Length: 96
Image 1 (tube, rainbow, N blue to C red):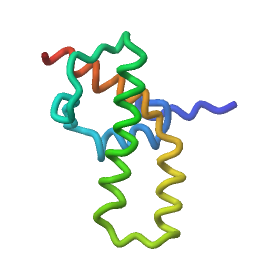
Image 2 (cartoon, rainbow, N blue to C red):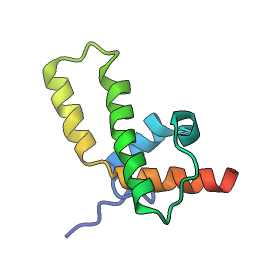
Image 3 (cartoon, rainbow, N blue to C red):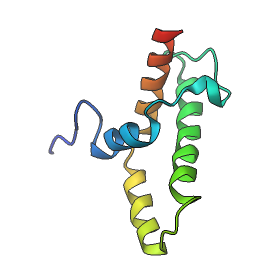
Image 4 (cartoon, one colour):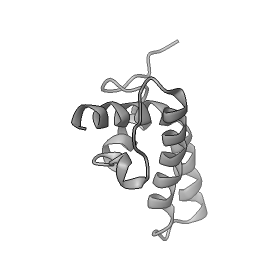
């Protein structure tokens, strides 16, 4: 089995989505407060929100064809949303 980690993240897709779509995201601006990395429900709730947030950013304002959208959705399926959520919660805890 090969190592698919990328720049310290689970995989390239997770790294790229975090870098280009989620960088600067403040959970408190989206109704999340008092988050804890130790609370799996916080990570789950934020990760589910992030999936919808990124999909809305990518697909709501574009003229993507169905084929391009299918490829993009396949790419997004490989993103480790829980890892990004835990990272955001840890950053939030450090700054607040």
